[in-house]
Image 1: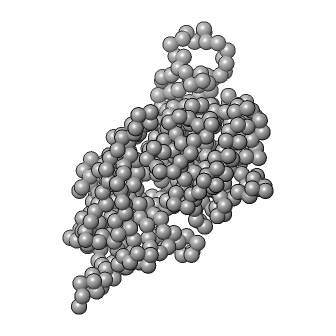
Image 2 (image 1 turned 90 degrees about the horizontal axis):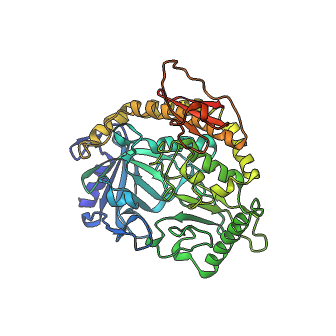
Image 3 (image 1 turned 90 degrees about the vertical axis):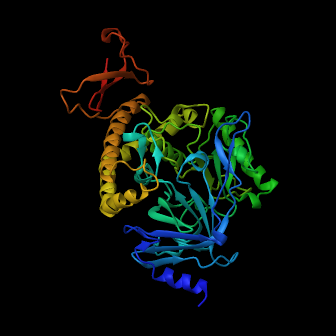
Length: 479
């Protein structure tokens, strides 16, 4: 019997114990590369005048991948034959790819398949990601979280983003070595159940790491440290004609925006409002690298406005809860379009109407989503994190239940703060009253986000102020 056949038969009957490791009841994703070659990369720093750290020389490595659960094989890519079977894997990411001990990866299948097993043909795709479990965040206990990606995904769905990438937790083995617990996640790509585009459409990113790409373009008003890079069309399919069409559309939109002209026929206001409201609810503060994706369904030269430019999906949630004000992209005029959009009454109206729809339900919806999450993952998540800690001992120090409760508490505080902040646009609603009568006043902030606690209360100018208390509650006070 050949070694290949022996391996195949073993994979079909693979037990919960693999390579001497007893796995919890999460899918086990096992990759065996050709000649046992591991995906590698070289760390590079930005050239002068640019920012960031990224990776290069991260070439795909071919191999075979299986996914098993409780001894049952859910998926087998078979041995790698170019264009026919197998898969390829490479290191991915910028700072995460360069610095995280648990390396993130991109997987490319030779044949489309839905690795999340949802039962519809339209979910099948070649492109998948393995994202690390660790997220550094100074606002979380022990300065880390394992489920901020979950929190961001939930908010995206509640607000009604057109597409939110789905995920599953898996334990990963590469060439017989356990790599830890990962997010197996859909990547941001064109697809029937991803970013839906006609073949004449485009998907681009306002990218801080453009300097590590071979094809990109800059617009007339773009911040000097960023440029637009392409997710679709692929760089290999890019022509000067296609690039000129996309660049012209973006420049015409920018020209109208900066000259205070009509931009409503260029961009989908609701899509842009949803994207920024998600960031405002999450309280992100990553202006430079918060993955600003934009897409247009099609481009008809005879009717350029047959579809409008949209924002999304939301991606990269590591700076969640770090802002004590609006999300930084909401107000930072040097990085993107939102500070100008919020000067426009028609855009503000769309944003406020969206807030009115979301505000009454969001806290309850968050609790429902997280209850369902805990029902599915509570025990098996904590068991897998214990296994994960055998190679990453400093990670996952808090149980998943603790992390969920902490995140829900922070969302309660964020919503209370947004209730106050949003009054600067002329919208007023009831703000949560202080529940703890013994709570101490710790700060007074004006609507520009500046602390005025050191000013004598009786000397404060007339206006609306935010009183912040020691129990995390906020109160709107008009003086």
